[in-house]
Amino acid sequence: MEKSGRLEVPVGIPGRGYSVWIGEGILDEAGAMVAEFAGVRGKCALVSDSNVMRIYGGRVRASLELAGFSVIAHEVPAGERSKSLQVVEGCIDAMVGAKLDRKSFVVALGGGVVGDLAGFVAAIYFRGIPFVQIPTTIVAQVDSAVGGKTGVNARGGKNLVGAFHQPKLVLADPATLGTLPEREFYEGFAEIVKHAVIRDASMLERIRPGARDGLSGLLAENVRIKAAIVAEDEKEEKDVRALLNFGHTVGHAIENASGYGEWFHGEAVSLGIVAALRLSRRYAGLPEVDEQRVTEILRSLQLPVRFPRSLSVEKILEAMKVDKKFSMGKMRFVLTPRLGEALVSGEVTESAVVEAIEELQE
Ligand code: NAD
Ligand code: GLY
Image (cartoon, rainbow, N blue to C red; front, side, top):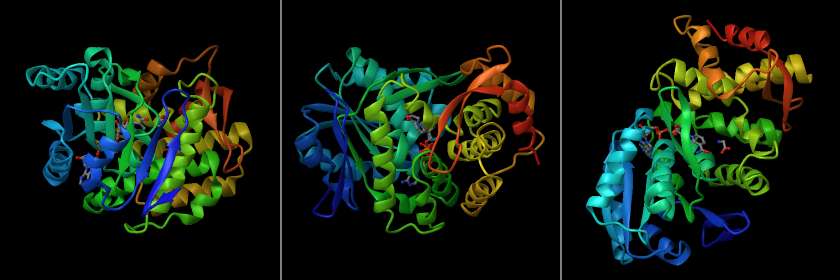
């Protein structure tokens, strides 16, 4: 739905529904929109990382204060390593210090790292307070800010500690994507390619590498896909939301095995997508031409489709086994039989996964 230049995508979760608003310049209207749509008042913690706070923190804070909210700003270091229990504790200490209570709320301003972290803090502070997502990367605008998965990493693996906690409102301003460095800009397209592969192959034709303007429509299409899946299976209980993990089984393991930071999330997912395409050919009959087409699109988006031999396959496999168990040598794996469709297969063997990962090595 379009209202005064803004697109509204509802996330229809029974009892916990909210809207994602997408529009250029929405950042400066954050305060008024939070007041109108989030059902919150009083004090909030504005959580952001060192890059985003510097560029956008002042504008968002001013907008919230203009709308009558009292704001404490809490900055965390930029990067995946901030998704840790130690950083959660730092947020909580700051919020307790500023006397935020059960009626207060959290505003997450930044990429997926800040959204997952601040959302988790909101999920556990006073056993759960409201939060608002203001995503500023493509990953966050099309994926992580929507759907209520929050959490942090533990030594043993990615996203091992977390909670489902839906935001009250999501405000996505595509103009913020203009300040993303080149690598951070492109990594976000891995999640867009994922959505296209599992739900809407025609979207592959609408991806224009490099174009930073006119993205609102593409972002909204992606949010609609994510919102529909989340509304159908909020807590990943019906093999529907699980489809969003396409490319993530191997992707998360690569992030963990390389110690977080070497590969951006989207880059690791790109590698995971290539492995999942290979397994889809073997187990679900995906035509080779489709595997090659998607791999070429990832390449055109400056995303990796191979990784160096210095990263060991054993380490990746070890990391994968933390959240994916093999039962009698087989694991559950998301595959695509044809572009635009996905399924969860229980047939994929450990040796086939190892082969698919080995083929990713340069
Ligand atoms: P990120 O949050 O680390 O952001 C990438 C970099 O861009 C950071 O250095 C950040 O400071 C910078 N940045 C962000 N916005 C900027 C802007 N507008 N201008 C300039 N710099 C900016 O990474 P990400 O890719 O957004 O998110 C990855 C994380 O999201 C991973 O931890 C992943 O697990 C998580 N994720 C979660 C879900 C979910 O459903 N909860 C879904 C997908 C990904
Ligand atoms: N990004 C995976 C999910 O939200 O379920």
